[in-house]
Length: 384
Image (cartoon, rainbow, N blue to C red; front, side, top):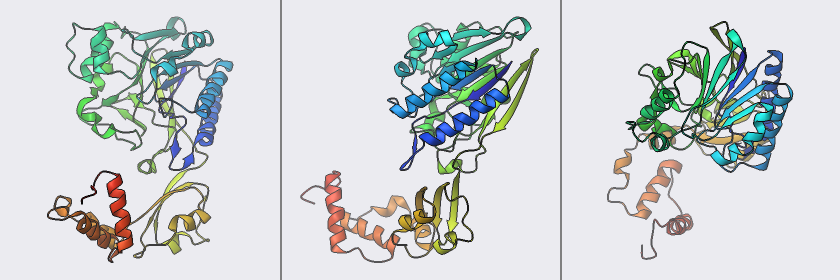
């Protein structure tokens, strides 16, 4: 039997000011082609299906279209919720979906969701564990000692009485660590991701009874501990830190107890690139390529370029962000932040910052604007 493993679709996501719905449709079309060409039996979707708890109409239409096409091709779907999803919204219509073999587990209800597909020696048990918090598990297992996420997940798995002697798959959305190593973050996982390792760590060894673990939550594709415990990663690059990621979709093949994992590369409609150099060099028409790509540009010009974004977007219309790396910015990076505010009033602080960035004094008109903004933000009071 063959399975494709997806995770972190984040349907409806934007990149800066750019709507990604067409890029997401393009990559789902590509995944659909892979599924048909490889004669895939089932699709595993490991959470963060949507980018927001209240998804846009375009995002819900795109998911509806994708699931309908999978059902039409006879491809079974196993889908769970992630921390970005609304349990209730993702679960809507799930009973009706089951008639088309689209199985959804959006909220832990006290036991691990299980379906068996195939027959005889080709049968595989598929278990679904949506994003779960320790408090949710305590509610259903009050007698268990649950002090951490690791305790919670182990309690869920132990209560399921999994038969480790037959092929089985788990689809989960958690922060799973390897042999003393944390997974490499993509950078676009969302607020709080960089602190999850302090409280949400789950050891990969708790999945020893599973032939393959399809993980979601981390956007960089990677294995955790062993090759059969894997983050598929997001199908598209969602942040600058993912610019060098090679996106792919894992194809898992079960053959008489043997498990094979093969990564099939994905090619986006518009790639993401980071350009660095002087403005004139970067916009040399003889060197410009793939102008439709999403561009992050770091300018090394010593002087600020007026309307740099407007100029850049004439050549690269999908420029997301421009920053600087020059002697001024490097000086700012070396400043001891803890000493910046010592014995300085607001005007002094802003004046020093302005000089660090622009190398000149701030005008009184500009200072008045900064004071107004500070008062509106509650940083300054009328008497200051």
